[in-house]
Image (cartoon, rainbow, N blue to C red; front, side, top):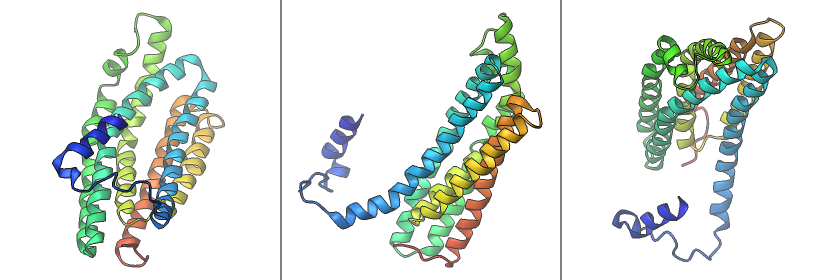
Length: 250
């Protein structure tokens, strides 16, 4: 994949003019430092988010094999659905970053807001499908004629319903984080993600699943709680940044 993309940027006339590999042997330490300072928090944010879903699988596995099978189906569908707002988030980073680069703070604010609305709207159809069509969706993965498959389908239906509820939060937090990256604001969102996912998300999942007895649905409730907390905090952060209360790197 890397080689194919490299061939495109070296041969396509739109990218060739940037001379990507010109004097690549010359070390640009200030640029390396900037990439590291901006990029490391993004990587840790992604790690916190992916770790949240990985840990949820471990928690559901403690409940039982059927629950884990249903969980795997629901996670697969949410991963597919997430690709759309994830793409919108990348576009938001670029559009906001271009506006910041030309000194257009109002344009950056508008680009971020539009992307945030789009990021929520694009997941609505999938959210409705998860809530209303959980059985046929789960049936594409599991055999209802098998006793374990039938039990897993019933559990998957409940998990997909919970997934439908948190799709808005998942899409919203992804795009809002992407908009903030256009301002090179990555460290505070990293802290928000770590606290939101691992304190509220995993903490809520453990409490709902075991002491309160909600099982796998409780784990998914914890996921929804973590994503909602992160989304709300990132929206507040975006408002603070775009109102000029936080220095913005150009």
